[in-house]
Image (cartoon, rainbow, N blue to C red; front, top):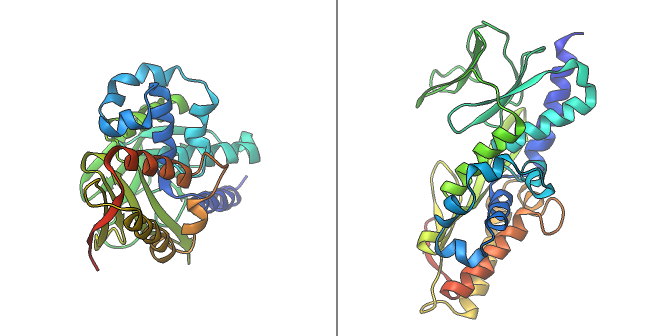
Length: 299
C-alpha cells in the first residue's frame, strides 16, 4: 500500500487534534494534585511538595482512568498529542502502522516503523515522513528552522539549540511518566492557544500561572512577549478588581486566543477542561492570597 493515503489520513487526524485542544498542562496539573493527596491550596503554597508526593514509581504503576485522561483529553502537551493521534490511526488501520515513541530530551515524538510517518506537535506543517537514512527534513528553507531525520535506528531532531537524539523507544506509560514528571517538577500551569490554516501551524496567546509570585500572566504573543500580569494580593485586590481581571481573561482569549481559542478553552468533558482547572486555581489563589488586580500591562 502506498504511504501517501496513510500520510493524508495522519495529516487529517493531526490537524483535528491540533485545533481541538490547546497546548496545555492544566489537565496534567489537576491529575498530579489529586494523585498527591494534597489540596490545591497545599500545592499552590508549596509546589515542590509534588515532587516528593508523586514519585515516578507512582506514575509508572498507575492504570487509572484519571491517568488515561492525562493524554486522552484534547488539552495536553506534546506527549498526549502523539498518543492520541497514534491511537486514532491504529483504530483506522492497525496493520498498516507500527508506531514507536521517543523522548528527545523533554520532547516526545512518535514514528511509524512501516511508513516513516512522524507525529510531532512542534511541526509547523503537520505530519512528516522520515525514511531510514534519508536526508534531513526541514520545514522551510532557512537553516535556523528545525529539522528531523531518522538514521540507523535513531530519531534525530535538530534546532538552533542543538541536536536531540533518541534510539530507545518508550511505552505509553513511560512517555506519560516522563511528561508528568516535567509538569510536576516545574509546576506552572499554562494554556497556549493554537490553530492550523493554509497548511501551517500558528501559535497565539498563552495564559500561565506562576504560583511562586502569586501571578497569572497573559502573554499576547510568544515572540513579542507583551503581557498582562494579574496579581493576587489581599492588600490591593477587591471584588471590583477581580471583575476587571476576569473580564481581562475573557477579552484575552477572544482577542489573542486565535480562531480556535474560545473553543479550545472549553473543549471536552465538563470538569476536565482547561477552563475548569484554571477556575480551580483561581478560586484557590483568591482564598490564599486575596482578590486579584491587574498589576502590569504591556501594549
